[in-house]
Image 1 (tube, helix red, strand yellow):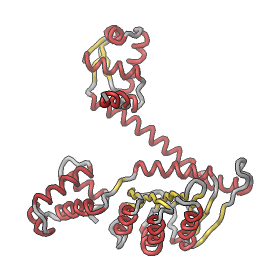
Image 2 (cartoon, one colour; image 1 turned 120 degrees about the horizontal axis):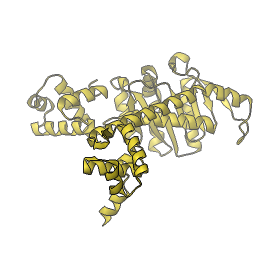
Image 3 (cartoon, rainbow, N blue to C red; image 1 turned 90 degrees about the vertical axis):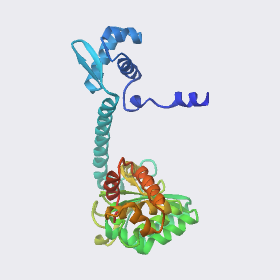
Image 4 (cartoon, one colour; image 1 turned 120 degrees about the vertical axis):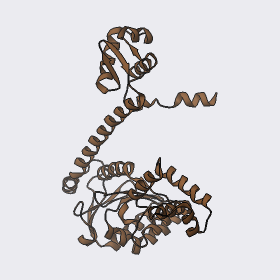
Length: 338
């Protein structure tokens, strides 16, 4: 009984992708009948013929049902879901473009609010700050004042990433160990092979943080808790080249827009494999990419062939790959081969 209850509460995948319950019922009926007229479907669903006709026209428009000579034919579920997923992705892309457009207006928002009023909280400060030490120490200061604080940040380039790893990651790690802050970070996948980067990010994850990668993050920004955000003086610019010149903004509207952008990027970003299990998976993938067979990999690593194959299986599951070749391609995309 508990299984049946949980099953009944699970969302229908077609409704999740935007179909109405009536449309889902009609599509299911067409699948079972394989081929049916509007009268057959009206009888099967106990709905008026006119209503069924309108709904079937919409299903045909969506490309999940075919219509030939007054009869409706079921399309294969994989093809139907593919069309719905593609349409959903188009809508998400449009939403992303709207977020980008909203983000482009942030400077105007900052100027307008800096010169005017925030009707909820009165004037809010926009502090112009310079210097990497000030940037990272300000985060620590805010976390000490209102713990535990969630920090979310995007680091877009190798120079900014290298500076963070060499000079400032340790203080954030210490704060995270002490329960004063938690970190979610998006970094460029191309920075993972840089000296010390993967090790520091692994430590960040081991102490409770989360890290994902993108091929090309759009710009640096940072959100500290619910009321403060850091914005670069030049969106998309390199922070070190601008002497770490940035705006520290305390305004819910700016924080909200940036948080929406971060969550959109986080959804697109790729999780990485960390810890011993992740290291083992990456080792076998890297050695296989060099042309070594399972037996040679086992000798090289000092483990059994069975262990090598188990790590390959884990890697393929982690990467969502159907073959070793596919795993190699996906591993390269995620920066495992660096």
